[in-house]
Picture: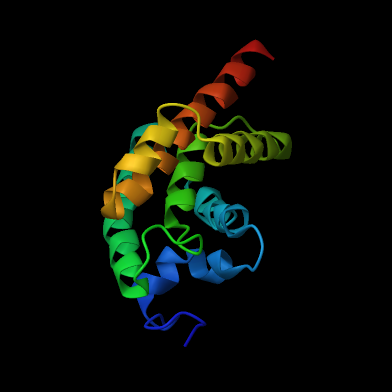
Length: 157
């Protein structure tokens, strides 16, 4: 049992929503939770872009349920420990990522920037859309903003 009432890391829904436990980090759970995307990326990086995008889209749809169910079980909307949304957002950012570890760092920094800063319209969605879709949508959009930055840098550098 975790420190949250009604939450168990033995429950696969909670385990995934908490990013395999990384979301339970006492400081910066979103940053640690974002790291849970990296093993997925390692496994998926050589897939064609359509297959990669389909898997990430499926993870996003499943994430709506995971995040909604876990938030309801916790009795709190979008608790910081729920980080499956960060996993999906980071995977969006890393789509068609150029080769090299420095691109991983650039993608990570770009995603965290947009996820933390939440520029318009991300902040609007974060404040006004609720449930599992609300938990997911701001990070999905942050992922697309970060993807644009990463791909722009890749094009111009």
